[in-house]
Length: 169
Image (cartoon, rainbow, N blue to C red; front, side, top):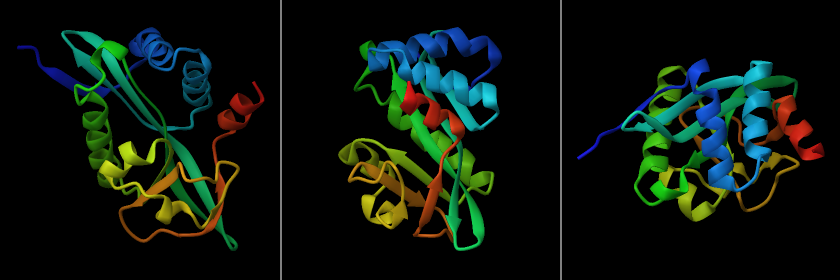
């Protein structure tokens, strides 16, 4: 029986991450977003899952801010999460999210947002009710948040610039 392991992504993983993203999403947009976030230094946490030495999963959290009144509150955006299609349903995505949440909380992060499938991300504490008060270009039922402490429930979400460039692409 093989053992899946999760570790911090390194520069040597870039090509493998690109392939996982392209395979998981069937296009290059998410891989381009990952490259742009890494190159711009907006990455807060990036993990990979390995099975028998092969990268089969990837998760990235980038810096996000909530402008609330005259204050700017740091938060993180989960985007993207990808698992090689042949490993879907094996729990790798959930393991990546759980490990990332542990590390983010240990680092003092208080708020994470995701734009994704509510039934899936809801299993990890994300809820639209927690994100519904934010002003965002992405505001919809799929915009969800989880808070691990005191964090604003309203304000304008300011994503890393790479998200704007990917929207324009």
